[in-house]
Image: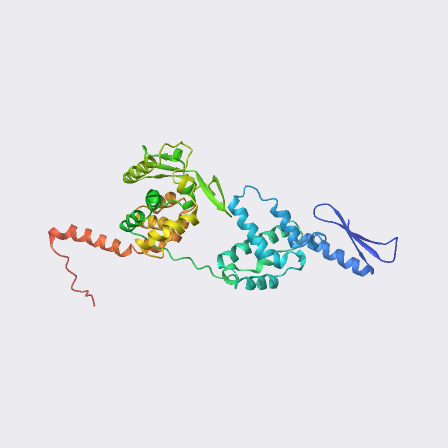
Length: 378
């Protein structure tokens, strides 16, 4: 039970109570009335569910972040490196030595404002997510009554992320680009354009994942490149692990590509760089991709635009969005529609023309449709 008692060692009073975890707590006061007020506040906070552990609240953000980060498991190397970078350069310089209980929403907004001149919007959003996650964990543990981020609205308080403009290549442009690049990477370009696989998925594709007789690819693994260290591992989501059917011409191209690279083992990579080393995005872009783009389709054009081009080709061919979602490895149909919705919108006129054509074919043998005399088009 909560109670107030006189100190035995010196003048003053001690307020004692039991926290929600069943641990006994105490705090000293010079006046009895202050001790009683404190207990009233403590008991009220326990009933409201916003009790704050006075000792935990004094922990600095840096100390608490280190504790909760140590509990994260099953992180990809690239994700861990990105999070570590955000904490080290964007979060800890401002909050490392600040006590948890001293951080308020004004501090958070000032911090966001200080980042806008030095970092891109996407990086700021990620840093804020990590920062807010630590404070959420602190609130859950009772170190603070409520995270100051609860008042924040990302769409209002964070800089707007400008989505890079997509480029959609036509089939002839994909072929021109493939023919312009070094022959070692021709199959890579065509596979990206006609399967929609991401660069990391292509770089991690092994011969055993190719089912050429059945005309499909099993996407199981991806390559990540973190600070020059390449690693291979499972894909991020269940949706990313998928089977992608191949057009017949691409089967022949892949078979020719494997034959041209000499005897290979089933666990070997399908696409490699010079001297048989794993692909490295930065080297490929600088030495082969950009020169080929300039010589064929023209700048700007990113390797990832081949994935966008694949989606656009499927949409224009009338392929169902659910099939496109599965080929691209999106977790939900909403991601597909949000990303390529404007391409679907562009087919509205074609849909109207198709309906008009079918109408005219149906009534063609009976003569042109005549408008009712009571209705006129202006």
